[in-house]
Length: 214
Image (cartoon, rainbow, N blue to C red; front, side, top):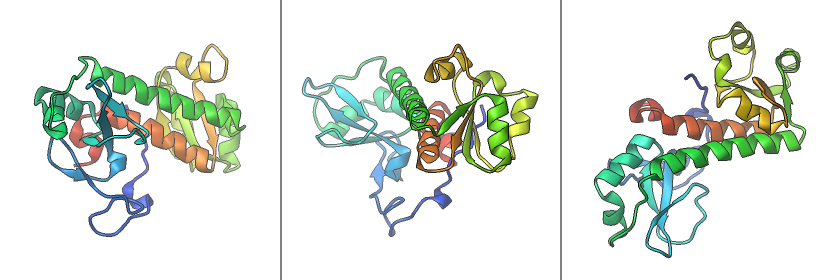
């Protein structure tokens, strides 16, 4: 799977000891390494004593932070790191790693749906290619089926980042169609939001070092 992600060099950087935009660095329960919040997943202990993923980082309670990869979450579970971090007995659902991946996927699809509702997304290779020629797109999202196709090669390198996401049927549901293979997002904040959400999903699925560039 190939994705184009926003690099840290493109993000506003805060003072020493802080992540982009001045956000404080967080310590991963699994590795002990410190990272900016956008590279982490926040968890809290729910009212029932079970671990709850807080992808939006808005839930009340003391945050427990893990590097945003499936490997790191699985390692935290195996090492009982959530209980150590919470300093109490906690419940951890066996399907937590899979549930997080599904939640990240849903967030990325919702970002695409938001772009469509705002009139900032087009579907179809011809429309995407036309808008690429006019320099109006800030992102192109391709279905998994297009990964090795000639058409994908034609949209790559045309001035807009290209990201591979889910299958064409899942993308099609965003547009009320049977399938969608190429989606273009108009330059602007919504393109950035879609890219960030797909990037989080892709990084979570990748091996730790590959996902975090170490």
